[in-house]
Amino acid sequence: MLPSAQLAIFAASVVLFVPMGLAGLHLSRTKMLFFSGILFIFLFVAVHLAPYFLSISHLLLASIFFPSPPPYSLLPPPSCLPFLHRISWTHAPDPAWSWDPSAPVRSCGFQSLSNPDASILLNGSWILVAGDSQARLLVLALLRLLLDPTSLASVEPDLFKRHSDYHIAIADRGIKIDFLWAPYERNITDLLVQNIQPVPPYPDVLVLGSGLWHMLHSTNSSHYGEAVNGIKEAVFSLHSPVLPHMFWLGLPTLISSKLNTPEKRERMTNAMLEAYGREVATTKILRQSGGPLMLLDIRWLSRGCGARCTDDGMHYNGVVYNAALQIMLNALVIESQQRIE
Image (cartoon, rainbow, N blue to C red; front, side):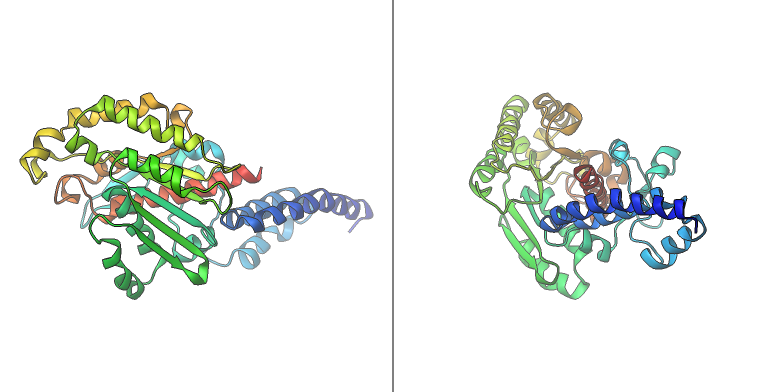
């Protein structure tokens, strides 16, 4: 190889690897970022050194760093966040979802993470989920992804103890999952104040969501909006210097004919659902309105799955919450990349 080319490679290596090494020290302290960070660093280095190793770059990429199949063939750029909910449904023989095949979505390279990929992404992380039965079903989707069937069968009964909290640690991967039963918005506000301490450790992922109980027992959209605004203020008062990855679990599509009590059919109407949605938008708690929480749009996902996906008109089959979980995991990859940059 020509000396000038060698000098160029040496200079490029210094410029790339010294800052990356320093970044690695930071990443090692925040393990959830490590998986996406390694992928981002590799792709970044590969792009810059490709002119000098063009003849072997594809071989290295395919056979050394990413054994088939690769855990992530592409890191979606931040501009892909708005496309995460663009999914398509099929209904035969059973409901199933996939990301829309349109060009913008396809170029983002979203993928459904497998057990090994999700375990690496979430390694060493504390995931705190607070809310009602919808939030509990999201935790179930996460456990179904992370645990083998035998382990899942042994812990699932504890998860579904009526109106209870749930805690699990997956020791071999250092993953801690807490579900806090918080059916009313004020419960979530109190939990944020009481459970997020002014000293580390802080949750790496925070998922919040409620509204079904409020709609049934209060049926007042303006009061709901005030309560959600209280959650937003509690989020902004967190002592953590770096806020965790935060998500808001949206309300589901309501199928009035399947709601199982007269009170639910009377009060939990689609008109009320629309009013509650407007109140959430008004609070500006959601990222799309400039707020801190990214929406996991259960209403959109459940509408796509359809009425056959629910027995009681409000709780949906696991396929809906699996879709929400995969959207969340892909968002974590994107957000982790942004924090590295």
